[in-house]
Length: 170
Image: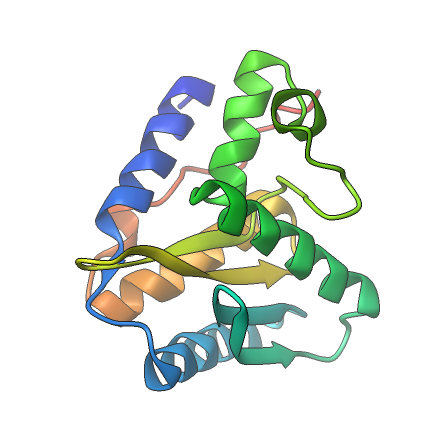
Protein backbone atom coordinates (compact mmCIF):
# COMPACT_ATOMS: atom_id res chain seq x y z
CA UNK A 1 0.00 0.00 0.00
CA UNK A 2 1.36 3.41 -0.91
CA UNK A 3 0.62 7.00 0.02
CA UNK A 4 -2.43 7.25 -2.26
CA UNK A 5 -3.96 4.10 -0.77
CA UNK A 6 -3.23 5.25 2.78
CA UNK A 7 -4.94 8.58 2.07
CA UNK A 8 -7.99 6.71 0.75
CA UNK A 9 -8.04 4.35 3.75
CA UNK A 10 -7.85 7.20 6.28
CA UNK A 11 -10.68 9.02 4.44
CA UNK A 12 -12.75 5.80 4.69
CA UNK A 13 -12.05 5.62 8.43
CA UNK A 14 -13.10 9.25 8.85
CA UNK A 15 -16.37 8.67 6.96
CA UNK A 16 -17.38 5.38 8.52
CA UNK A 17 -16.45 5.75 12.20
CA UNK A 18 -19.50 7.67 13.37
CA UNK A 19 -20.80 7.71 16.92
CA UNK A 20 -24.51 7.81 17.78
CA UNK A 21 -23.67 10.47 20.43
CA UNK A 22 -20.73 11.99 22.29
CA UNK A 23 -21.27 12.48 26.00
CA UNK A 24 -19.26 11.85 29.16
CA UNK A 25 -20.15 8.13 29.17
CA UNK A 26 -18.99 7.58 25.58
CA UNK A 27 -15.81 9.56 26.32
CA UNK A 28 -15.16 7.41 29.41
CA UNK A 29 -15.66 4.17 27.45
CA UNK A 30 -13.39 5.33 24.63
CA UNK A 31 -10.71 6.64 26.98
CA UNK A 32 -10.70 3.59 29.24
CA UNK A 33 -10.52 1.35 26.17
CA UNK A 34 -7.37 3.20 25.09
CA UNK A 35 -5.95 2.83 28.60
CA UNK A 36 -6.67 -0.91 28.63
CA UNK A 37 -5.11 -1.37 25.20
CA UNK A 38 -1.97 0.52 26.25
CA UNK A 39 -1.58 -1.39 29.52
CA UNK A 40 -2.07 -4.76 27.82
CA UNK A 41 0.61 -3.83 25.25
CA UNK A 42 3.03 -2.22 27.70
CA UNK A 43 2.78 1.19 26.02
CA UNK A 44 3.23 4.63 27.55
CA UNK A 45 0.61 6.95 26.11
CA UNK A 46 -1.49 9.97 26.85
CA UNK A 47 -5.14 9.78 25.73
CA UNK A 48 -7.60 12.67 25.45
CA UNK A 49 -11.26 12.66 24.43
CA UNK A 50 -13.00 15.98 23.97
CA UNK A 51 -15.91 17.82 22.52
CA UNK A 52 -14.42 20.94 21.01
CA UNK A 53 -13.82 23.33 23.88
CA UNK A 54 -14.63 20.73 26.55
CA UNK A 55 -12.29 17.98 27.78
CA UNK A 56 -14.27 14.85 28.67
CA UNK A 57 -11.50 12.30 29.39
CA UNK A 58 -7.76 12.54 29.94
CA UNK A 59 -5.17 10.03 31.10
CA UNK A 60 -1.39 9.77 31.11
CA UNK A 61 0.43 6.52 31.78
CA UNK A 62 3.86 6.14 33.38
CA UNK A 63 6.63 7.02 30.98
CA UNK A 64 4.85 9.96 29.36
CA UNK A 65 6.04 13.54 29.76
CA UNK A 66 4.62 17.07 29.64
CA UNK A 67 5.70 17.08 25.99
CA UNK A 68 2.94 14.53 25.28
CA UNK A 69 0.40 17.01 26.68
CA UNK A 70 1.56 19.56 24.11
CA UNK A 71 1.39 17.02 21.27
CA UNK A 72 -2.21 16.22 22.25
CA UNK A 73 -3.13 19.91 22.26
CA UNK A 74 -1.47 20.62 18.92
CA UNK A 75 -2.82 17.51 17.16
CA UNK A 76 -6.37 18.04 18.46
CA UNK A 77 -6.18 21.66 17.23
CA UNK A 78 -5.68 20.28 13.70
CA UNK A 79 -8.86 18.21 14.00
CA UNK A 80 -10.81 21.16 15.44
CA UNK A 81 -9.63 23.40 12.58
CA UNK A 82 -9.95 20.97 9.67
CA UNK A 83 -12.43 18.29 10.83
CA UNK A 84 -10.01 15.67 9.55
CA UNK A 85 -7.65 13.33 11.36
CA UNK A 86 -4.23 14.79 12.02
CA UNK A 87 -2.70 11.81 10.18
CA UNK A 88 -5.00 12.28 7.19
CA UNK A 89 -3.94 15.92 7.06
CA UNK A 90 -0.29 14.85 7.30
CA UNK A 91 -0.59 12.39 4.41
CA UNK A 92 -2.26 15.03 2.22
CA UNK A 93 0.49 17.54 3.00
CA UNK A 94 3.18 14.96 2.22
CA UNK A 95 1.49 14.15 -1.10
CA UNK A 96 1.46 17.82 -2.06
CA UNK A 97 4.86 18.58 -0.51
CA UNK A 98 3.36 21.32 1.67
CA UNK A 99 3.31 22.29 5.34
CA UNK A 100 0.41 23.46 7.50
CA UNK A 101 1.99 26.88 7.64
CA UNK A 102 2.24 27.08 3.83
CA UNK A 103 -1.21 25.65 3.14
CA UNK A 104 -3.29 27.08 5.98
CA UNK A 105 -1.06 29.63 7.71
CA UNK A 106 -1.20 27.53 10.90
CA UNK A 107 1.82 27.95 13.21
CA UNK A 108 3.62 24.83 14.45
CA UNK A 109 3.50 26.14 18.02
CA UNK A 110 -0.26 25.45 18.01
CA UNK A 111 -0.82 22.84 15.28
CA UNK A 112 0.80 19.45 14.62
CA UNK A 113 -0.32 17.32 11.70
CA UNK A 114 1.42 14.23 13.08
CA UNK A 115 -0.88 11.27 13.49
CA UNK A 116 -2.86 10.56 16.61
CA UNK A 117 -5.89 12.85 16.70
CA UNK A 118 -9.05 11.53 15.11
CA UNK A 119 -12.33 13.38 14.54
CA UNK A 120 -15.35 12.27 16.55
CA UNK A 121 -18.24 12.42 14.12
CA UNK A 122 -21.75 12.15 15.56
CA UNK A 123 -24.71 11.02 13.46
CA UNK A 124 -26.75 14.06 12.41
CA UNK A 125 -24.28 16.55 13.92
CA UNK A 126 -20.97 16.08 12.09
CA UNK A 127 -17.55 16.42 13.70
CA UNK A 128 -17.99 17.63 17.28
CA UNK A 129 -14.76 16.57 18.96
CA UNK A 130 -11.64 14.44 18.85
CA UNK A 131 -9.89 11.48 20.40
CA UNK A 132 -6.13 11.94 20.62
CA UNK A 133 -3.27 9.58 21.45
CA UNK A 134 0.33 10.63 22.01
CA UNK A 135 3.38 8.58 22.93
CA UNK A 136 4.04 6.36 19.91
CA UNK A 137 4.96 7.30 16.37
CA UNK A 138 2.20 9.16 14.55
CA UNK A 139 0.94 6.24 12.49
CA UNK A 140 0.66 4.06 15.60
CA UNK A 141 -1.01 6.84 17.62
CA UNK A 142 -3.54 7.11 14.77
CA UNK A 143 -4.03 3.34 14.69
CA UNK A 144 -4.72 3.15 18.42
CA UNK A 145 -7.39 5.86 18.20
CA UNK A 146 -9.06 4.13 15.25
CA UNK A 147 -8.84 0.70 16.89
CA UNK A 148 -10.48 1.97 20.09
CA UNK A 149 -13.27 3.62 18.09
CA UNK A 150 -13.83 0.39 16.15
CA UNK A 151 -14.09 -1.52 19.43
CA UNK A 152 -16.63 0.97 20.77
CA UNK A 153 -18.69 0.80 17.57
CA UNK A 154 -18.50 -2.99 17.21
CA UNK A 155 -16.56 -2.68 13.93
CA UNK A 156 -13.79 -4.98 12.78
CA UNK A 157 -10.59 -2.93 13.04
CA UNK A 158 -8.74 -5.18 10.58
CA UNK A 159 -11.28 -4.30 7.88
CA UNK A 160 -10.29 -0.61 7.87
CA UNK A 161 -6.85 -0.49 9.51
CA UNK A 162 -3.73 0.82 7.82
CA UNK A 163 -1.08 -1.76 6.92
CA UNK A 164 2.36 -1.94 8.51
CA UNK A 165 4.45 1.18 8.93
CA UNK A 166 5.21 3.28 5.88
CA UNK A 167 8.10 5.73 5.86
CA UNK A 168 6.92 8.75 3.90
CA UNK A 169 9.24 11.22 5.57
CA UNK A 170 12.47 9.97 3.99
